[in-house]
Length: 295
Image (cartoon, rainbow, N blue to C red; front, side, top):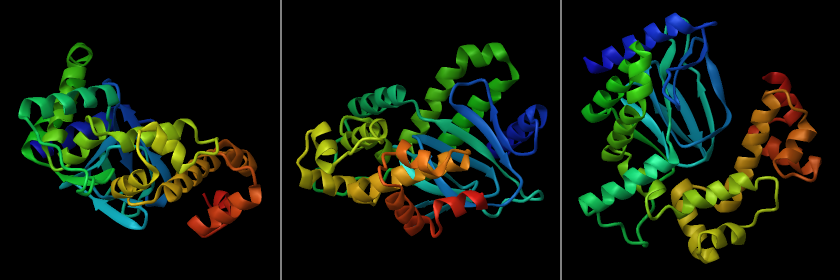
């Protein structure tokens, strides 16, 4: 019943505020947006920041290093670190629109919660020899998450309630996520052992520079070999593959927004436009100029 209430709240909110049929809509709570898509959208390059994406109608897709994640109203997507993905909604239509909520994960609050929860619960961290959770995962809509999300979205009825209670209700949602299926991923991304997330954040700030594996490993105090192994466990890609994917996905987004191909290449650290075109075509199946024309 609570999930149906959530769906109704989102549909009413979109109906009240939309300028066009599709788009993202503010809720009044920082980092929380509603969205609707009424046409099929094929998967395209994107860079996801730490966030929760919960669907109440339809289904959405995300592709990471060839692995496809399809989720609807029974699971939500949890992305715990900056990730180069391909995302879309190929099944969306006017009759069956994609409707949901996007919740940014505030790094400071998530870190406080993760560390506090490990401390209070006396969680024993996994040994370094065990696989590290992935930076993206699907989690069940359990009762705790559903109730917390409902309480958050119900604030939209009152500006005063939203202003005063918004941050605390959002914290409840974060807590529900940490307690749920994605909890282990979240604790390792935002808790004490968050070296890979910090390395990716460093990469995102220096994307235009000639970043090496050694640079990233040094930032988190690891040897090259240990960093390489942990990085691949967390992201499914080697550091070199990840750097390339981050650059190409960022460039693809910039091109789709109207930026010149050569300018986009330089913005993400490519000196050679021919190398950029070769690697872009190898990843997306067509040249950047042709890809831009097809958008």
